[in-house]
Amino acid sequence: MSTPATPTTPTDPSYVDHALVSPRAVRLVEAFKDALARMHDEEGLTFDDLTAVADLLQKVQTATGAPLALIAMPLYSELFQGGGDGYTPCDDVESPTVIPGSPRIDNPGTLPMRPEEPGTPLIASGRVLDGHGRPLAGAKLEIYHAANNGNYSGLYDDGVPTYNLRGHLFTDDDGRYTVTTIAPVPYADEHVTSVGGVAEAAAALGRSLYRPAHIHYEVHHPNLIAPWYGEIYFQGDPVIPVDFVGPNLAHPDLQAPTVLHNDPQDIAANGFAGPYKTAEFDFILKTRTSPDTATPKEAVA
Image 1 (cartoon, rainbow, N blue to C red):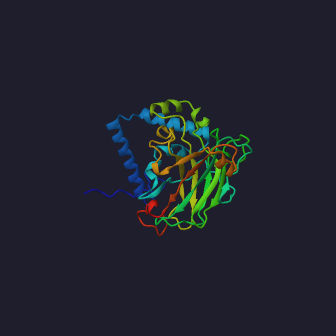
Image 2 (cartoon, rainbow, N blue to C red):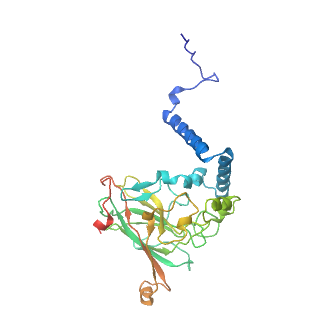
Image 3 (cartoon, rainbow, N blue to C red):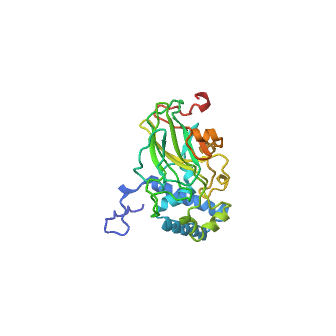
């Protein structure tokens, strides 16, 4: 018969406060180790592979100043992406490019921009709907995107106003929003791509060094299960299949149809000096009273 172990004390090297042990944390660590073991056995994962990835992520973190967890997020973000069942897919967390406190604009309205802001004008519009296809009036939309050179205002000391191409508005009684801005373009973040090893890593994965054109949105409303965070892309963008970020393509439900307008009378009627674009995108978001499966947009249009 074995002798019970003598209880340890905080002064003992073997002391463990069992009240602080988290069974979930223990299970998660074991599951992670099991996953690495399978990759080792099935894919030939080596310690050098792990250190190479960790080293590259650390270099990017140093170059950008973003938290390491957010630098690594593209590797696993799809695992936590919300949406599905007819709802608009969403990210789990705020983007590291957001700047709190953006100015409120009218609806319809125009994002703050510099005089002669480079780029093609874009009118982005759509609706915010619940799972029944009903409008969410008064939803707050945070809207922002990079300038034509790929830089986001307020992140670097480059002389650009902090809230350039950033603003927020509230949907009208029909859940509609309309904002005029400059059409985003694909960009390569020079702070990331200048890091040694990034170009080689992208090439090894068959990826471009560029990100597809996109607009960042956040949607907040008291009736939402959770705020919506994410990026809206544009159908037909050739960079989407080779996006620098993430292991998978942008979800088709996150790609807005875009139209280029060249008619002189149409251009003049909208107050532009040259061709402009329009993009229409509806958000279908789950509220506290929404069904598990959303009503198709076509059924309530």
